[in-house]
Image (tube, rainbow, N blue to C red; front, side, top):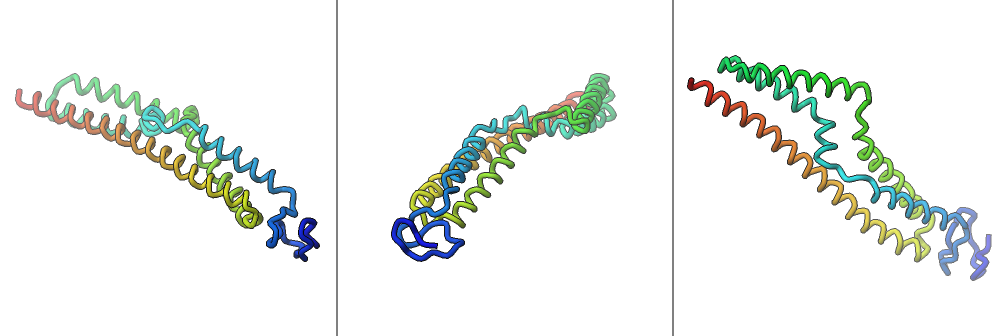
Length: 187
């Protein structure tokens, strides 16, 4: 095959002329559009919030609360903690039923983010392998790589905040139980 722009002899597998940068294969624009689309999808995924994270992990909190409240009840004999134990068990059962029946759709943003990230990285890899000699591809890949780092950083920062708040709620629950043991145990 001969480059239509500079006349250089090219192998049949060549997609970009190494001499002049002419794109021999016309799929490059399609791949660049796909990369942009995947990047926009990635940016549009809702961030992980405390509510989303909590609803996905609520059964853990309710189970810990039930155990802690029953221990406090046996240590203090206060009926309030028996009621709180029953409430925590009811919430635990509801949370587990929702988790295992698929009623909870809050994992969707996380799976959408992961799927969009895989698609974007796949398209970027394809562009890099086949069209990296083209200057426009190199520049756009560098730009997208920079944007991708920012998007991933923000995504992970939101997740860390959600986990931190969840841990704070858990610590508060344990503190209430300890306070209950201390106050009611001295009676």
